[in-house]
Image (cartoon, rainbow over all chains, first blue to last red; front, side, top):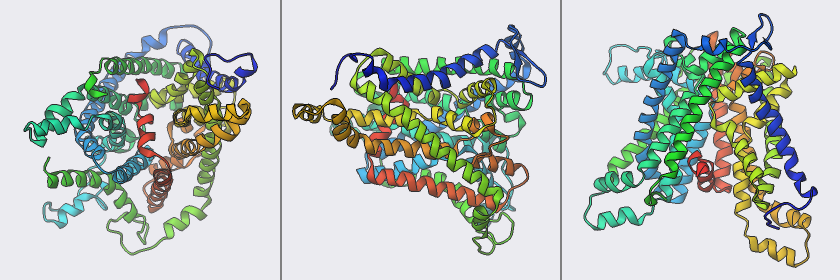
Length: 286
Length: 268
């Protein structure tokens, strides 16, 4: 049944439908978006098909630059926090019994699947004045009266980390569970303490997986759209918010498309970088 | 590492993950229309309102229809593709596989804008069918990866045995292959369903003004102030996700699925 090549046209039938749907509904929309980024805006409508590169020229405004820098900054911050906490956490999980692993994975996948609207809403409640954790601190006598910590920069960071953390763990899970358990054992037999083992053997042999994860999480948080609008102030808006704003509120599809194309180039470069790092991984990581 | 320290660390992570949900759960039980935690009084009225008021029922219904049909469509695309890729190792099948992975790898706003320009050009902007098809393509990655994993888990000797006994490829598919990938299809469907239910930006860009899904409804409602009903919706979502993934964890091979779904190993 397993063959090198399909024989005859009939054998090609099963792939016809997936091929058509993916091309029509994914490749063509992409092509249209790419084309629209070179078109001109039509007030009241979507776009006219006059060719121009003005949209790309109009891209680099002060606002766009500021939003781009902020998006990169907050995503990098969240990626570093998530990997720093997520790496030891994932290491502990992979060393647990299978049943305990499944329970943790169910919790993580459930959190990961939650809509960003819901996560942002939950965090704004947790940081609010009436229901928030500051009430707990008041009760403990650490603070005078309850305060609201949302919206703000740290509320935004917490919300973004909340979404990115399960993702980080799931990205780190395969390389860490593939790590040969004999390696840390050998290090400890030779007299290394568990802490030394963790920092030298475990961290050392997975260095490239960590770098790849940092980039993956960075690209993932770069895509957040809703959280900055609920947990952040307008100066905390990210590129995704700007693109949606341009497309939906200003109905400027050409400019929004040009932004998206630019954003895609940045993201693809990041994914390419991840793949390069993945390829040059040392033998210990397998 | 010190055992107690490790337990403390794990407990802190659990607190971080659980505390927003605990607070929301408490707020959803408030008796009056206020957002206190711990709740003042006790009532389940907000849950009743969620399932009786048409303002919430319509988005719930929309979301359910979209999630059910788009996951079905995603499976219908993923199954033949995964089957073909497993049976024939040809480059164009692999290229299509990469194409199926791509929507999930890019920042969602880009895929969403692609869909928006497409449906605006085709003239179906604002229709529910546009949301359904967009979600099917956006989430096709999940069943594609899980079902491919299912195919790879089939022991080739079973197929050879069936063929030796005289089964043609149709019979082999029906009696050997399909029963073995069925549970992977169910997992793929479940992943797709939950994510479609929670998805915001694609649904919003494609037809957010006419077809209100539950996440869009919540976001719109947030602008007019918070109410305990939103807390009730949140708990509804959390329970649904925990139930579905709990079932996968109980009956499926979650550690293996996670290993395959992680982007790191997909690239390799």
